[in-house]
Amino acid sequence: MQLERILQSHGFGTRKACRAMIRRERVSVAGQIVDDPFADLATDGLVFSVDGTDWPFREQASLLLYKPAGYECSRKPQHHPSVLELLPLPLRERGVQPIGRLDEDTTGLLLITDDGQLNHQLSSGKRKVPKVYLATVKHALDAAQIQQLLAGVLLHDEPAPIAAAAAEIVDDHQLRLTVTEGKYHQVKRMVAAVGNRVEALHREALADLRLPADLKPGEWRWLDAEDMKQLGVSP
Image (cartoon, rainbow, N blue to C red; front, side, top):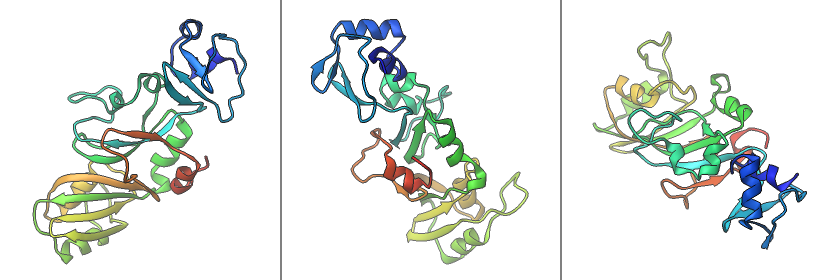
C-alpha cells in the first residue's frame, strides 16, 4: 500500500495532508526517513513512525483502555470529558468508539474499536459475554444478599428477574459480581435491589480477558491475537 494511503487510513489526515507530512520528512520506516508519499510498502508487520512515535499498521484499531473515573463513554459527552480524549488524535480520527459503556464514575477495563463486527459480537445481549466487576458497597455484605443476587432480582422496567452469573464476598464491603446482560446501571441496580448501595465500581474482566496488572488508569494498549482468543472472537 502507498505510504500516503497508510497514513490516511490511520487517522493522520487527508491524503494531501499526509503527502505533505511525508515530504517534510516526518515519517520513517525501520529507522529510515521515507519522503516519497507513493512508496509502496508491505503492510504485514509494518511499523512506521511519525515525528518519532511508532505506529503499527492495523487494518482496524482495537484497543484496551484502563478507564479512570471522571470520563464519559461517549463521542458526545454531556457533563464530563469523553474517554476518547485519553487516546492520541489519529486514533480518534479513525472513528473508534467504546464497546458498551461504563458510567462516568466506574473504572477499569474498557475496549475501544473501529471494528463494527467486533463491537457487535461483544455487545450483543444474545452472546451473554461475562463481565466481572468489583463493587465497593455501603453496608456490610452477608450470605443472604449473595443468595438473592444468584437467584435473581427484579429490576424496574425489566419483565423478569435478573440473576448474577457469579457473586462472592471479597470482604465486608466488597463484592465481586459477574453479569452477562449489560443492562443500564445493572450492577448498581442489582445491588440496590438487595438492600445495599454501590459506592465504587471497577470492571476487572470481560470474558476471559482481564485488565492487565501493569496498565495504569488512563493508559491503553493494542489488542492482540491472544486477547481476541480470551474474548472468544476471531482475530
